[in-house]
Length: 125
Image (tube, rainbow, N blue to C red):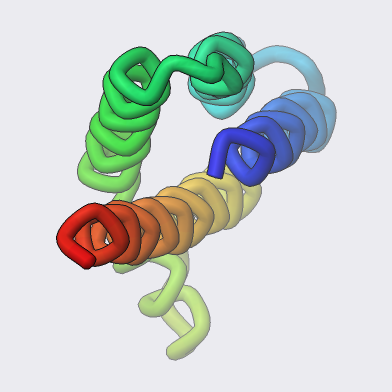
């Protein structure tokens, strides 16, 4: 799961850079996905440790960060659905970036929870 985390980190960094450029490079808040990606990448690399305790710790830190990322951007997902329904929003690029971040965070959290459940079942067998 650590390698998946590193892949998601790269995607978050790319999302932040694309969002920053799409908003005319004037809104530094568009780089928030980069910050999340950087943290996930650091803790993902640390989770490559052969020590199961360290791996477990860093993966739990990663899933917590992703959950916080989802909770912080879930309103962007709601706004995106409103935009799809024909509503108007102040900054469509920001809404799309937040919605993308929310979906990526949600997918990552789901993958992590599935992995944690599988690891627990494997230890019990």
